[in-house]
Amino acid sequence: MHRLEISLTQTARRSEINIGNGIRRDLGKLLPLNAPRRVGIISNQRVFDLYGRDVIRSLKAGGFKTMDWLMPEGERYKSFAVLEKAVAFLSENRFERDDLVMALGGGVVGDLAGFSAAIYLRGLPLIQVPTTLLSQIDSSVGGKTGINLPTGKNLVGAFHQPSSVFIDTGTLTSLPRRELVSGFCEMVKQALISDRSLFEMTVTCLQKQKVSSDFLSSPEFENLIAAQCGFKASIVANDERESTTRTDIKSRRVLNFGHTTAHALETITNYRFFRHGEAVGYGMLVAGELSRNLGLIDSGELKSLRDAVSLCGPLPRADNLDTGAIMRALKHDKKSVAGQIHWVLLEGIGRPKIVEGRLISAKSLRISLRAGLRALERQKESLH
Image 1 (cartoon, rainbow, N blue to C red):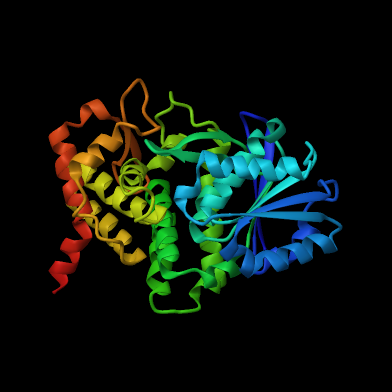
Image 2: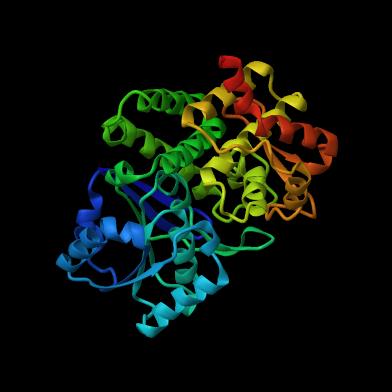
């Protein structure tokens, strides 16, 4: 089992990440002895049917009392209406400040359960048990929680660090292919802004998973998950609240690489068409085009980015979307500072650069959007 610790400099708190195949069956042993004895599990039906029994059996064996509440499945249910029901679940079961909320599921469950824990009684302890690849290497780590608004994604939320994250790599084998592709895209995103070592490690693993059906349960892939978590933890530890004044490569803002376009794509399709990581895949392609058009990277580096995204697997078609609608949605990006979008672009692998939107012309953005959204289609055409 891998174990990582995050020491948060801004709030002087510690959070830990535990990674291992089958770890869900040991939660009752791994939670601290002084942990609250009541656990409210928030999940969805699909995940709970697969793993709920193991988790409850383990917790009860450790002396914990459990209650569960299941939310609907899908990004569009990260809403005020569903949040109200989650908080009502905690209230109706008379949860107290020392009781524990456990998020069992992917990023949607983790975001909504985490936000519920953040606001009920002004904060309950939180445990994240992510079951998708994307949530394991990204959304469960770092304490961001929230819900969506019709105008944009994650516009309402709070920073609420989990006391522990338990990553069971055994859950990956049950994921649909699109969920894996989504997670692979997020891996590529982190690798591109980290360093060449993590990039090469990620690309090598993605090449192997294409020819090995059991690679997801291999020690090599578990090592990659640990390395990905370690990178994100290093960023979060030094910039927990994502300072808007920082522009260095260790700023938490660099983790938004690919997300500016991604959130716009999700918004204009009402969170029903793209998995989050799929949208991030296109977001990286657009950011790559912008980086090349601004002279930050050359065509060879852009090709490396495209090839890495292509290794993740097929993405839903996006070149038929309304470019104007995407550009309008970009104006609601929650990362705006003083009314300006701040893009995370690349000067090379492992060299993210934050660029003010005023430096990017509408024409250049439109060209980059069109090119990025059909980049993979062009690759397919060139192979035939």
